[in-house]
Length: 125
Image (tube, rainbow, N blue to C red; front, side):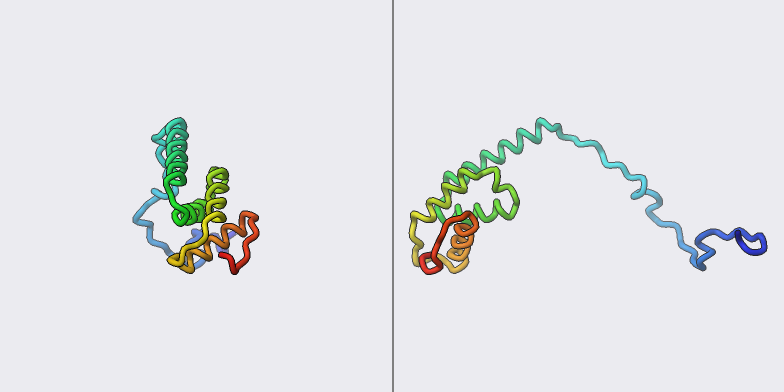
C-alpha cells in the first residue's frame, strides 16, 4: 500500500522515468520464420559435404592431411571420418619428414600422433 492513498507506478516509486523504446516490443514479440529448408534437404547436403571431405582426404598429401585432420578436430566432426584419419596417421608414420617441414607442421604431426595413441619419440618427429 502506498502511503496517504497515492498509487505510484513502479518506475516512479524508484525515482526513475524511462523513455519508451524506439524499437517498441519488436524483440519481445519476435517470432522467427519457420525453416525454409526441409530436413531431407539438410541430410542430403550433409552427406554431400561428407563426400567432399572424403575426397579431400583422398587427394591430399601428407602435409595437407595433417592440417585437414587438425581442422576436423577443431570443428568437432572428426568422429565421422575415423577411417580416413587412421589412414592419414599411418601415412605420417610411414613418411619421414622432409627438411622443408616447418616447426608448426612438425609439432602438429607430433601432437596428432600422440593424441591418437601412437608412441612417437620427440626426437624422431
